[in-house]
Length: 135
Image (cartoon, rainbow, N blue to C red; front, side, top):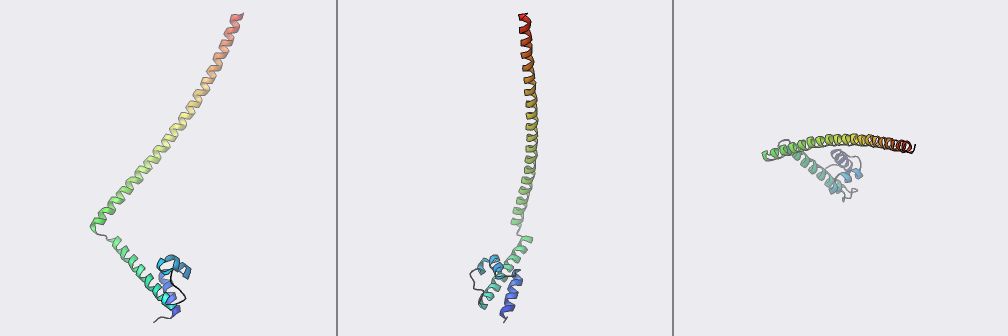
């Protein structure tokens, strides 16, 4: 049977934490345990070991899932890649639209300037014509 200090050290090492606060934050099932008692540390050790075992089993399963999941994962990966490509295309198109809008705005400003210039020239021409008619 382990001493309390050995038990604590083992739990901290397995959980990769250094305080009770960190331990309780990382493992919800440990939050309600009274860590002043040796029995709580024994329960914590079991909880940490079980969760690590589950994580290990899941990692092994992920490395070699059943065929139906391999197909599903491949479809998900393909859909994700297609989304990424379409998203990149959309961003490119948005940049092009923005560029076209900026060019149109510049063109509109140029046309407005030309229209104002023509309007001034027409007024001058009218004034000159009116003066000529008065003479």
